[in-house]
Image 1 (spheres, helix red, strand yellow):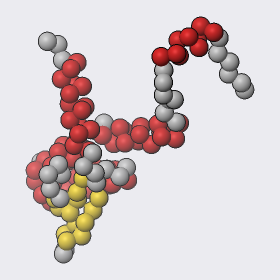
Image 2 (cartoon, one colour):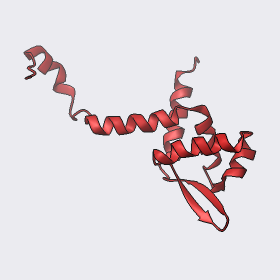
Image 3 (cartoon, one colour):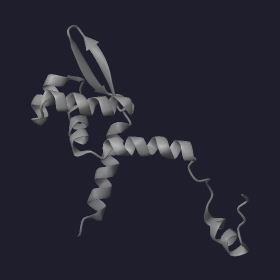
Image 4 (cartoon, one colour):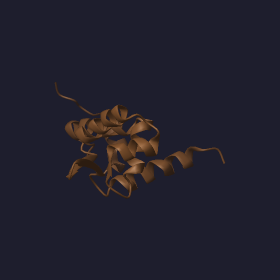
Length: 117
């Protein structure tokens, strides 16, 4: 199927200098946003913001039961947002990228911008 644009559509696109995001990249990014869209997972990530922490400490900090923390960590790990590190008998979880903090801060700024003034 060939998509044609009319002259008026072409004029509207004159100000657009970048190509839209590719379908594959958009799908991957949507999975990351889906993982970040859960309040419990955001709370867990806030615990991992400055240090690598074992599951039991995450449970204690958030007030969640350990099986729930493990479930959410699995989702975050599958999306590449956290990584496990074995330290002796314990597995510590760490934020997988320093880019995570600015991304969450940007989302917080969006939230602040939409609040009535």
